[in-house]
Image (cartoon, rainbow, N blue to C red; front, side):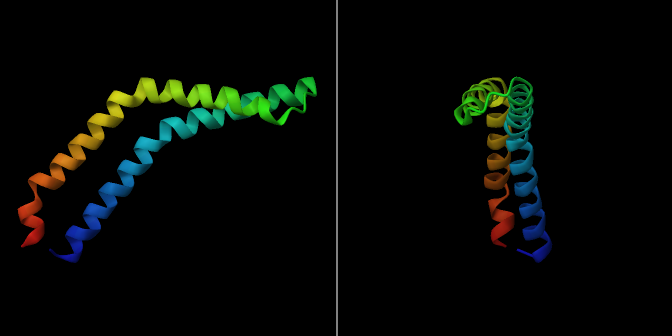
Length: 89
């Protein structure tokens, strides 16, 4: 296995990590920002108020994007196992 193949595998893995985590992170960021603006405008200083909407939003994102995430992971893993003989050489 050459260095180029290893770098290509690592690039694919890092791209998958970024793509698969992005929906949850972006949605959590948007909800957190909206809750912070709401707290600032109403002058509510409750620390725990921001956690519940973020948790709910991230759970909804996991439910919505779950099939896509699972298919990406399965495709990547199948690609690794299909090319295992090429990696060993």
